Length: 544
Image (cartoon, rainbow, N blue to C red; front, side, top):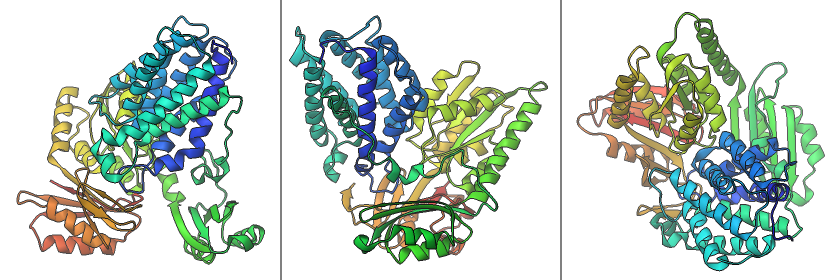
C-alpha cells in the first residue's frame, strides 16, 4: 500500500466502510440506550453515507475534490442526529484536505483533527461518551503515535481502527446512561464500523453488502406504483419453528392467494415478507402458522395516498397564489402517523414531511419542503429530538428565505406550536408564541420495551410497557393501560385545562376512551381523543 492516499482509493475505502456499516446496522440500532422500538442510529448513519455514495461517480483521483464531493452529498442525505454528526465528520475531513492532491500521514492527521473539530461544532452542547469522543480521542491517539512520522496508509488505518475501538470501549466510563444500560455508544460503534471497513479495503479485502436483500425497510420504495385497490402494505419478520423443513416455494404459492407485490426472503430461521393485501389479518394469521413474529408493520396505503394528495393540493394552492401573494410566514412540520399528519394539515401547516421516530427524514427532504412554502420566513417543527440537527443542517443550505427551527421535541409540542402560529404575524411574534407554546405543554409516551435493562432507576423487562415523561422513563408495567395511568399521575397537575390523548395503531378508540374515563376520575380537565395512528407508541399524551 502506497504512503499517499488518492481520491479514488479514498472513495473506494469509504464504500467498503459504508458496506461494513450496512451489514451491522441492526446490531448498532440495538445499542440504543432507551429500550424502545425506534433505535435507529445504525440505520440513520448507514442511510447517510450510503445515499451519498450511491450518487458518487468514483472517478476522481484528487483527494481534495473527492472528499469535498462526498461530504457535500452526505450533507443532503443526512438522517437523524447521528447522520448529521457523521456528515460533519466527513465535512471536517474534507476541510482538512483543502489543497491536497494525495494524502500522506501528515495530511491525514490534519484531516482527522479537522473532522473532530467540525463534529464538535455541529452540536450545541457536546456530550462526552458519544461519537464525538470517539473521533476526538482517535485523532489525539493518532497524533501521539505518528507525530513527525510517515507511514503507509495501511499502517495508519490499522491504528485508526485500534484507537477507535479503545475509545468506543471506554464510552460507558464517560456517560452514566451507557454504564447503567451496559452498552457502548451506538454512534461511536457506527464510526468504528466504518473505519473497520476502510481498513479492510486497504488490506485488499473490500467489504461487500451481505444483508441488503434481508433489510425489510428496503422492500418498498417511495416510487412504487400500486395496481388496483391500495389495501395494506404489510411487512413482517418470522422466527421459523422448523426452518430446516420450510418450503419457501410452497409458502409463496399459498401467500399469493392473499397478497400481491410479494417479496419473500428466507435466511436460515428468519423469514421476511412484504406484500400488499386487502386482508392483512388473513395474511398475518397464515404466516403465524410458521413461527413467532419478530416484527410487524401494516400501513393503509389508501390513507397514505390521501395524505400525499393533501400535500399536493396545498402545494398547488401555494403555487397558484405565488404571483399574487407571498405570506410573511409559513410552516413545515415533520410528523409520523396519518392522524397526526391530518391534524397538522387541518391546523394550516404548509407542508408535512412524513417522518419522525423510526423514520427520520433526510436534510434533503426538509430542504425540498422548505422550498415549496410560499413565505418570506419558514418555520420548521422537527417534533423529534433526532430530527433537530437535520433541520438545522437543512436551514443552513436554504439561501432565498429565512428559516427558523422551533425546538419541538415531540409531536405533542408540534401541535401546540402550530395552534399558536399565525402566518400573518411577524417572524419575531411567531417565534415567541411558538416557543412559549412548547414550553407550556407536557409530553408523555407509552411504548413497549424491546429489551431488559435498568435506566433512571427503573427496572425494565423486555415486553414491559414503559411510561416516558418529558423524555425520561419513569415506570415499567405489565400492560399499556397501567403504564398510561402511571404516566398521567406524573403529568396531571391542578392547573391542567386540556389533556390530549393520541392513540396509535397498536390500540383502539375503546382503549383511549377507557383511559379518558380514568382521567376524568382524577381531574376536571377537558379531554380530547385523537386517532394519531402513530406506529410503535400506544399513546402520545399532552397536558396543558
